[in-house]
Amino acid sequence: MSTTAWYVLHSKPHKEPSLNEYLQSLDIETYYPTLTVNPVNPRARKIRPYFPRYLFVNVDLDEVGISTLRWASGATGLVMFGGEPATVPDHVIREMKQRVAQIRAEEKQFLDGLQPGDPVRIVDGPFAGYEAIFDVRLSGNQRVQVLLDMLKRPIKVQVDARVIRKNEPRKY
Image (cartoon, rainbow, N blue to C red; front, top):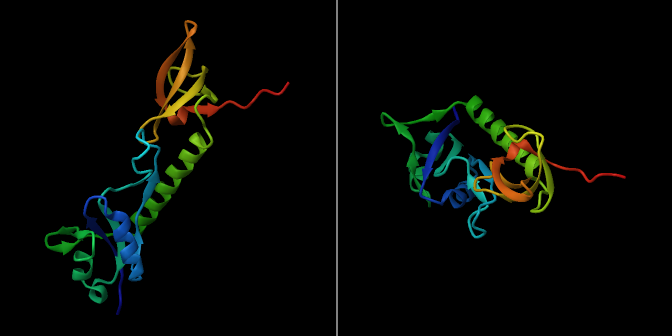
């Protein structure tokens, strides 16, 4: 009787994408959650793993064999506890998929189409109600820098990306 389970595979640094691709070429079901980021350095990676150096595989270990996973190009082996491969319950994988999808949707909702110079409104926090000019996304996509007009000069302020909304052009 064939029974599959989700396992955690540890990878070498920055080898998650190629390891994921390799395993999929072997018809092994994988889950490699990633997030899109806008790094400060334009040459830095734009897609980053949600769990750096880890990905999840759904396999029957009796059929595939631990050595196939341990010696896969870019892998360092399965996560083990007490000499036994650690399993991840299906509901945990489902919840992770939902959470990553939610994060992606929030990123899209808050920052999509926002360009430096766009007028924004701050809707929460100590600057709630202020209008500002969007300046730049900061590392990790969770914070942004805006320019507030205070004392007749622009002041750079860093805020959580979720508290800004793009101002719609006024219709006259």
